[in-house]
Length: 346
Image (tube, rainbow, N blue to C red):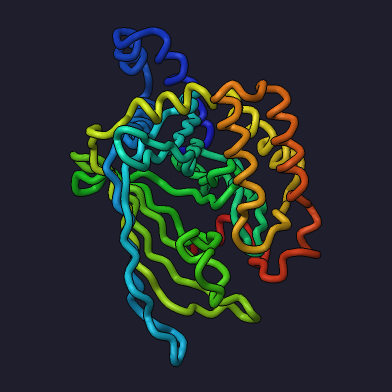
């Protein structure tokens, strides 16, 4: 499918969504077969992405499987879980944003933790990728490589970027799944705070829709980046999202209702930074608690009525910009070489 066809599909679906089902069937009947098929696939992709919204019982299961360095002993598996509500933040047809909200603690006094966010863009011209050293870079997606694809960009609890990639939703054997090429990621928090023997993750990242929810499957190589990249160990991960609402779901919705405007302002500041820089980095090495804790606290103050929105956002912008720089060469000593995005699929 050409980029032009893809854009036509996106524009058509966005328009038809305002006119009802009857208009959709008529428009499809008047289209050439190739364009009708493109619209059908685009609709199916959107349904798959939106299917990840909901309320879930979640398990996070990670197991190291193979050692690649003499003397390295595999670590014990890490298994955790909880309850998570996933909400649609934005849906523009060819762009969908999903916010994850963890609900923790006893039912009588639940506490909500703003978790990760995933943004999906249809046929993106570029994607923001992690290149090591707490740094990110825009990488171009050629017209031939972007046709029919969706990018997924994942953001951290403070809405700073985490990683991004481009892939295609497929539906073989009755399975709706999205699998991009391998991508680099920062260390996961489960390792960031407990170890310093590797510096990045080279990951295969698969999202699969199931009858009972969805799963996020990972095949991770833990990379040491002192000199030529060397895999320390391989890890298999599976995050399972099983539809479940027997927990204080209302706490997640109340939190988001009270903080949504604040986080929209935080996202806008990160969007500005991304738009103005081809490359940028966070100056904090390792765990970024000094960045995310003030933002989470400001959100709570806004929700509680202890601080007005605009002063809170002004403070948030100051916090963010205090840790962001485009001078990554001075700060990031373990960077992935610049490559054209298309070459990642070879």
